[in-house]
Figure 1 (cartoon, rainbow, N blue to C red):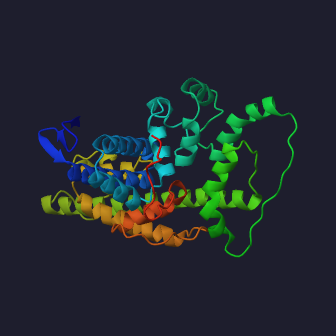
Figure 2 (cartoon, rainbow, N blue to C red):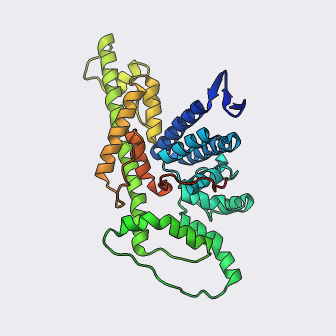
Length: 348
């Protein structure tokens, strides 16, 4: 996208107005959020692309110095519940060359908070940490903070003094703690205060990881079952129409008669929902829109089947139900935006 002036852009052969630019960017972010939640292997790339989109929009906002564009920016970040700190995280992640390097995509975590802690590390040092397996795909934020902060603590002080211990009322403790967790952790990190999470908090975090894996497994199983049902129906119908064999003929034989390969009409070798989807849509046996509706149905079933210990956030009014559920799944990556939040001090 080439800059034409402060209010118009040339995108291919089309001139985009500021409102069109923000609208198309908003749709792009929605798609990325959806893919980030649904397809684990795309999550890191989605986070980086969201960061690049936000970075471009913010730079455009700064150059324009227009109240109208400021308003469009504020509406966009409010819709996705992005606070200034969250926007900063995404942008800084997208600008780190090591995190964007495809060689390391499967070797680093994809949580926004974990990636943000990694983005603070100098690229050369970060690459060494990844290549030495000190940072892996399972590294959490606290692991990364401990990894990068411990050497500093040893240099500045050999003896640490315990200051206080924190506790919270057992009633509704999870929702209460989650409401200020990010702010508390960031405060401790900024002031170089060592901390360790309680067994209850560690158990909560572990349960969310386990839940995500169960949901992913459930969706994958449902997608394979649906694939097999649709493909069997079409192949049976094709053989019957062409009078190639009897209805009792084994599926493998029907597949051979219609000249289909194993990798075309079975889910053999598929290891992700995305691969099942691509294989089915290539056959042209089902519309992409129908598949999308099924994905929503399976996710709703999975969320009900595997409930989270963390209470759902306040209902938003974005208008797209699946995006809302996706954000609930990743709610630890987003900070609610207060009304009329001041973005003037945002640091790019």
